[in-house]
Image 1 (cartoon, rainbow, N blue to C red):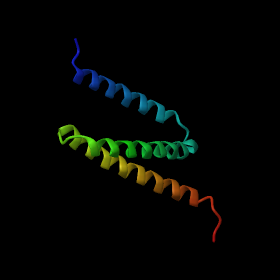
Image 2: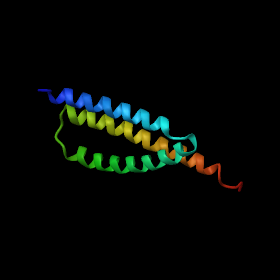
Image 3: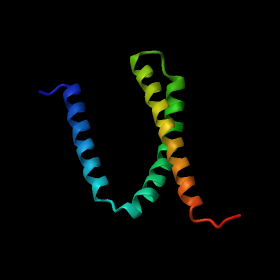
Image 4: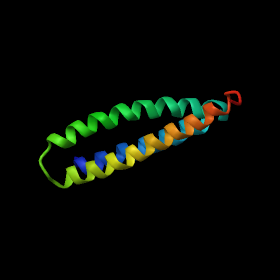
Length: 94
């Protein structure tokens, strides 16, 4: 039988491969709007993760969870900044 770590590693490799293949198939004109939507969903995930991390007891998993939460927050903020910059190119001069 496979252990939980091996199953998790297997799922991670499959998800990475699938994500890479899907992103390569997206045309460049659709990439930024799709990423904007993904960042909005990631923002909701960050709020949920904040709620879960605050009620959990301190362990190694919580430390990794906080690190992942920090990195996800950086990703969301960067994504919204890129989206704002993209949308400002469509606006007229003021």
